[in-house]
Length: 273
Image 1 (tube, rainbow, N blue to C red):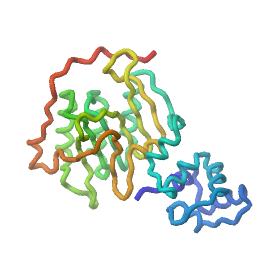
Image 2 (image 1 turned 60 degrees about the horizontal axis):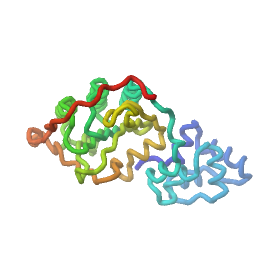
Image 3 (image 1 turned 90 degrees about the horizontal axis):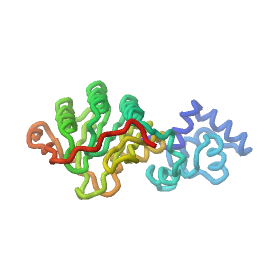
Image 4 (image 1 turned 90 degrees about the vertical axis):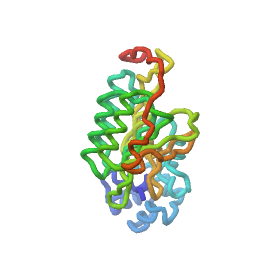
């Protein structure tokens, strides 16, 4: 089970539980101890309103994010509550977008979730393959919306299946999942997310089908996209993810990785207006 946002906020400030409660008590004048803070972080006990306000002040984060685990809300609900505050940076050039996506992939250590069936940037796809090859414990999800739209993505999926067998487990955990969102007419979503950051490409201002802008999202938003409620699942609004491709190497040759004939995208500008 993943650490709560409350615990991650403390760790982000390099505070022990004892140090955190010392600072908390200075704000509230109370007598909270480390064992009670531990119970709050794990969700075994609920935090009162006074201490919620004080911890939000101490950690400089929103109450609805810090205490989502106590209130029965998932990380996605917390993400929705934070609004645009989760946006770390707006990317207005295609080169910056690709660089940011590669950085998210390179920084992934636990989980890497990628959605969409249009990926074709060679550096980005190569970074994913490198991460999968060099980090055997990294759990990678590729969520497709219909078959791959480009030959480069089809070839990338085949290479992933050559690097790992989706049917195998490492320390009891499957580390490669390739699946389809059903129904197939569900609206396509695009993002790459690790346990610490995420990038969401945005439609171009210059054409109907290009994606050359985007936003970098912080840790809490990334948690809203890649969730671990007792096991990893990918949030893909608009349909259910069915991980049915590449169940084992025996089935690899039967995977329909073909792509339909499509008109080429308009030429990408190197920036957005």
